[in-house]
Image 1 (cartoon, rainbow, N blue to C red):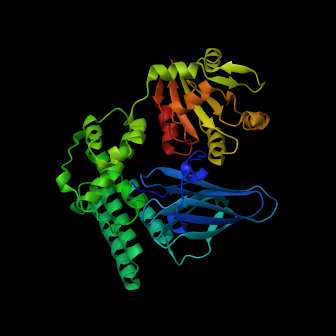
Image 2: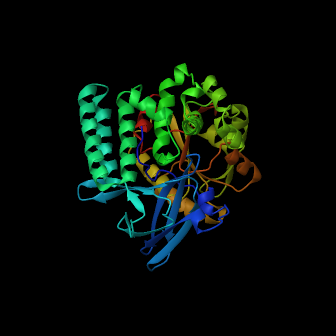
Image 3: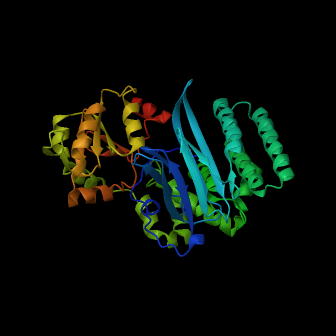
Length: 435
């Protein structure tokens, strides 16, 4: 189901972050300015035209207030930009979330960063979805906690929430919020009744005036998930825009680690779509199951530095530290979500048959800083990936485009899970306990 995006990944190698694209004009891009106090850091999550997630970071390394400016390409109509972070409060911890829906005139956005939160300076061309998101998130919790019981009672509450927002936004003549209200309603209705006629009609009849893909695509992914075991798609049942969204959603469904190499009918259908032919190289790379033999060989020969700056191979590390399973943690000292994950793991009961191996992608020139951080965070098996061609080839082979990244291996270095859950996710402990 749809949830707002929290800051769970750092990606310093994507097109948005490094500006590896051609901007034809101001109207070809969106500019974000963030006023940051000294020595502070924040970031936003942004989806591109094929729903890939990019993390755009802003960091002030100076000792004075500084405005950091970045631009990213306009890929789709009505982009959404999300911000989310966990901050300390008097009661413990608080999740701060903001979701901004940009219209076609939203080419410049200005924010001020204050005590962990983001404040937008001019929202005249931006629709802020915080309030509607909060209410529908609360409804999501009710649906989750009900565990499939009392569906009709929950639907009555859901209908009431939808109608209240509908009346309010129609009265205000706010078309953007009205459309967002419909999408959130369909998303929660789908969670209750996946085959509900309103859900199916919504999926089959998308048009050019529909709201942002960022809000809609998760509904299509859930639709695919519900029919995956008996997959059958009649293209004539879907509008042209619905077919495009369905193909994008299928791409993301098949890139999930638990789905890679499965669902042949779904794979075959995706390869008939215009989306596949336009993005063939990217799609094939993401949905093709990696060669296990090549992975084991490349990993065993991975060249690493230990905390004494002695060079060792991964095979030597495994020989000295036998275990039934190994959890690889790819991280870096500059990656705040990575650091949060490392600290979180110290509060989790890691089974005795699992050893955690921390593999840093920090630059070799920063190896002393890496060692200090590894020691201060009590990383028992921590190594720095050296800058060799073989190592670069390995990182490319496993598609390490974002960190933190966790890979679970068995004792023979066979990958058990290419994309293990983050320590902050509830499934992390459950998956470990299942071993």
